[in-house]
Amino acid sequence: MTIRKPNMRRNHTGCVVGEQHHRAKLSDAQVAQMREAYAIGKAQSGNRFGYGTLAARFGCGASTARDICTYRTRP
Image 1 (cartoon, rainbow, N blue to C red):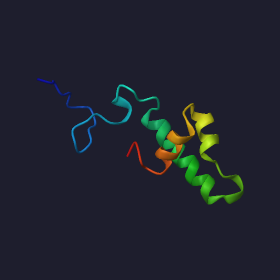
Image 2 (image 1 turned 90 degrees about the horizontal axis):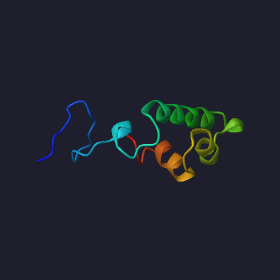
Image 3 (image 1 turned 90 degrees about the vertical axis):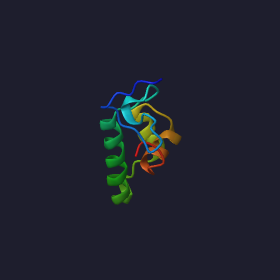
Image 4 (image 1 turned 60 degrees about the vertical axis):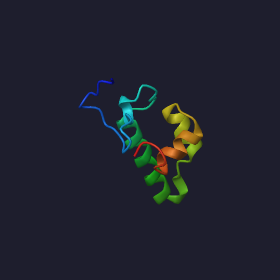
């Protein structure tokens, strides 16, 4: 029998998601900052933050930055 903590965010299957997940490297605030920087950079075509730049800035992989910015992970 598993004990569920009521304050943890869960997805539709009941799995822990977000910064409470035991393997999460980025906080929810960092994810929001990454998405905001990507959106601002996309709006300003001359000063665009690419996935590699964001990955280096936040200390994660480029594919992780891509998945976060395209909402494939961390909804």
